[in-house]
Every structure is written in C-alpha cells, then in structure tokens.
Image (cartoon, rainbow, N blue to C red; front, side, top):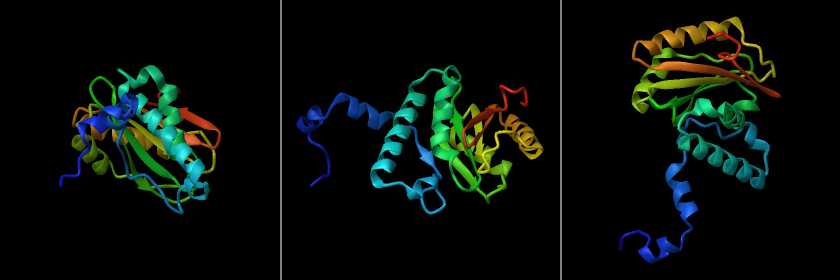
Length: 188
C-alpha cells in the first residue's frame, strides 16, 4: 500500500500547516552537535529555536526582497550562527529578485579563524541558481569589528562570484550581542 495521505485527511490539516511545510527555506551544513551552541539546550528550548528558525526562514522566502527586511536576515543568521563556540562561515543564496533560496553553512573553523575556499562558494551559488548572496560568519570572541582578513576575504569572494554574475550584497558578522553589516559600514 502506498504511503500517502488520503484527500480527506489532507483537508483536515490546517492550511497554514500545509503552507509552512511548502515554504520552509532549506538549510544545509547546519551544525548540530557538541560544537553547536544549541547542544546545551533542553529539548523544549531547542524546539523553540527550531520553530523560530522555521518562521524566519519562511518569512525570508515569502518576501519579495530580503533587503527590505535586513533585521529578519540578521535575526535568522543570529539564531543559526551567533552563539556558536567556533567560527563558522555561511551564505544565504538569493534569486534575481533577492528572495532567499537557501542557507548553507560551508566552513567550520576554530575559536579564532576558519578557512574559506572561494571555489566552494562559487560552486554552491551555481548549484542553487543564485543571482546574489549574503555572506555571514560569526566571531566567537563577541567582537563585531571586521578584521583585515574579513575585508580581504569579502573582496576575494566578490571577485570570484562576479565571474559567474553573482552579486555579493553584504557580509554580516555576528558576535555576542549583535551583528555588523559590512555594507552598512561602507566596507563592501
């Protein structure tokens, strides 16, 4: 027998629940283990964070342009990366209308650094069919100030992605109590 839901059961499922399941933003390479800040959370707390991420992810997918709600992007990234005990580098992939396609955490490093390979970011942008990206990484130290290495990496990624017509809209650094947009600070 096929493992499907009968039409009568599907009608009883709330429309909002059906829509939520269809619009969730895919997230790849998400840290979930001893190295994740979520590791010490109770099951109920973890479930609350997961629900918040799902809500923010659906909101980002439903928007016409993520640049219209930079705070939602920052909140989403803060929940994904903000409190991790090691540096992580992630990318939010966007379509030509700047709607979120997917979130992917590509690289995990140590307490003070992570290695980022532009080739991997370019390959993922092509795989996702992205027209633009928002780069993000966390500073476990809590510092929100971009380092010289952060600025050089951003320039390198902008150049590499420009070769395949993918724009870098921002590079957001997350720390203990907030975030820093390199675009807002004129560092792009």
